[in-house]
Length: 318
Image (cartoon, rainbow, N blue to C red; front, side, top):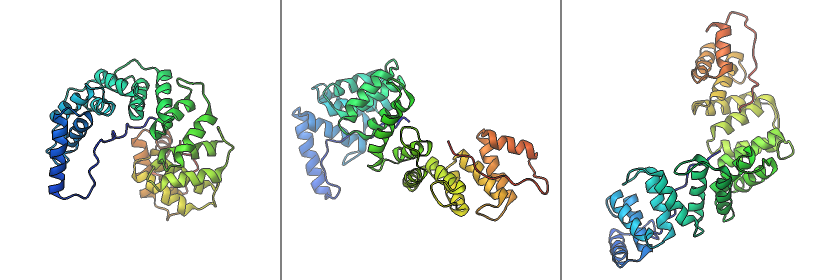
């Protein structure tokens, strides 16, 4: 349930719509302040070089200016410097150095740095993996409203890594950020509602959350919503809707959806029966190692006999 670190916050305040003359004037003022040693201006100038905003992209220059600000203890510079070391932009990739930068900023209460520090302890990048430490830093950032920290902390509660396993707490944290529109959190709330773990089982509620995430393009949510339509749990059974959502997920490479879509073509559920399409999609799932698809192809020897028993695509996506 790990989330990729978000883009670091910027010290820049330049509006999106400014004239070239205005931008040039702002950059001159920013550079003058940076050269006077103002850490906020040094950080902003460094970020301009990272983004190529008003200047040619130059990670070496970004590193130089961010280092100047970081050396003055400026937390946002320390954060962004840590990101450069993590990515290896303008400098040799160095997770240990990135960890030190994140730690400096995190100790100052910087939520993004606390989140990145939690990720480092969670993954063991730059420091020995320690899920309890990860949970502690995620919690500090989460308490400041950091959505990705809340998401990862919920994941630790769901798995019992670094904290006592608490599905109700995990569901509660996922719900907080799901209400903010976080698609993966919406999917996870749907999973809790469908399973009845941590919350009362409610397939209608699960369908609602899966739909929110599915409409934002989350393949596993699309596959899960399709399964509910296929089985009639929480929604009126509708093979056509099931087919459509399985197709969206299958097109994104979701292996369960590919297998179920093949089964729907094979059965003629929600779509005209088409054995060529059935085997094409089941083969896609088999190519990804899906056991059910492999078993099906083995049982049919790659070609179904006439009058083959119809199989319903009832398997619930994981």
